[in-house]
Length: 284
Image (cartoon, one colour):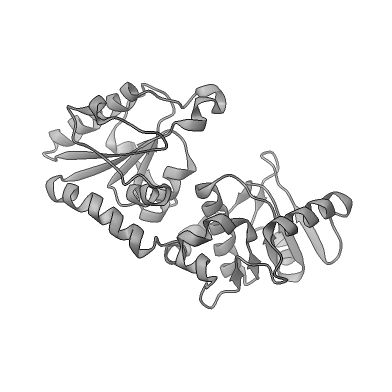
């Protein structure tokens, strides 16, 4: 059995981490519990109802404890007795990542309790193999789906290509010394380049802007630009229904790419050359 012990990042980070363990647990037939997803459970039917079909997966602890109680107890245990014959804490780091398909790890997961903490767990092939199952578990609810359709359907009716633009602000002002905090003119530069490329192919282009800050469309008056619905979940899944996605490196756009099988391009610099053939779907 594996229990995800510690919260790592926000929504998209935890969606990816949970998904890695889900597909690995399905593939190797062990029980998985993830109490760290508690504040996001309400957004998806599977997590809200704690129903994962025939698979032994749960977002609730067997003893009924809250995540806070569990976290306090296990964090103390981790520092006092991190490993016994019955359980083990696994906390990989960037220099020592844990491959979830490593036979030694799988043996432990099947025979004792693993408390998993951190981000550096690797799972690749099974995210592809079991992608349809992941999509069924993390499908947006009917209200969100209708909200997205109301936003996107009129745009898709009038344009050939829909490009999702993830304008990440907020914490990106300081993260990595603001390396990926791009101004509106930078985004406009890339949008104009892509518009020209598709126009040359005889395709009309529209852009849907998703951001964690308010963005005025006045900056993009010479482009066909529209706001996404504006919610954390609705914007995420709006991106997943676009034809292409671009923005700074972020698991938010990565999840949209994975979920919707949408070609994605992360902007590593403020004025790189960009071409639509550089985009690729995640785990495809």
